[in-house]
Length: 231
Image 1 (tube, one colour):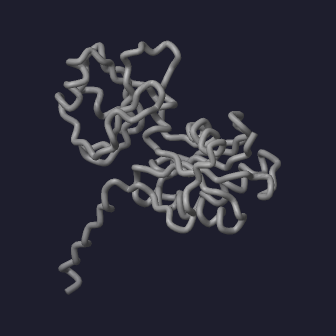
Image 2 (tube, one colour; image 1 turned 60 degrees about the vertical axis):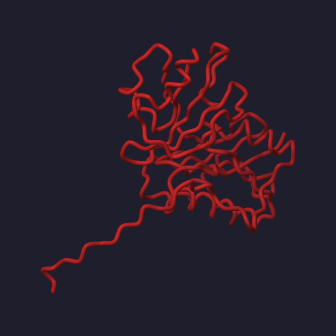
């Protein structure tokens, strides 16, 4: 059973976990988005202490690869790569939206159900994709402007959609129909465990030297307005 350190920083949540096989050994999470960079290494150290592990005990590092926050992804991936370089561990990249979709799945879900994880992309945009019950992509990740008819073709085909992630809440007013369901599933290191163990067993490792996060969109960089009173 592989021992894996999991790093999830794609959204406002900074989540660090350690698992042995499919069992969670330690978890630390913070909602202080502006302090991801300052807190992440301490959270990793605390998880290692809680799990009573040394670096040599780890078999791999798993990181949420996006899409999501440009800054958050950069912090998480750079930290994961740094550990992999320093400790000689393989890197496992986990699709953020796919992890959310798998976490939203319940055994009681009907067979005609699809999963639509959403990550807030500000204003009325979300990063979204659609997956089937096995976690296979039905619609690839995209930046979507949410409107009343955004997923109408799925509803017209008689399919139900289960929405999750931190972008789903603002979409509730648009989809007030029986086929639209919302689950309070947010990004967490715990959701990386299942796909990370599977990737480890299949030896699906990312190239530490060349791997980059899947940002989907460039960062929103604004030019500061000069204070005319200082002229």
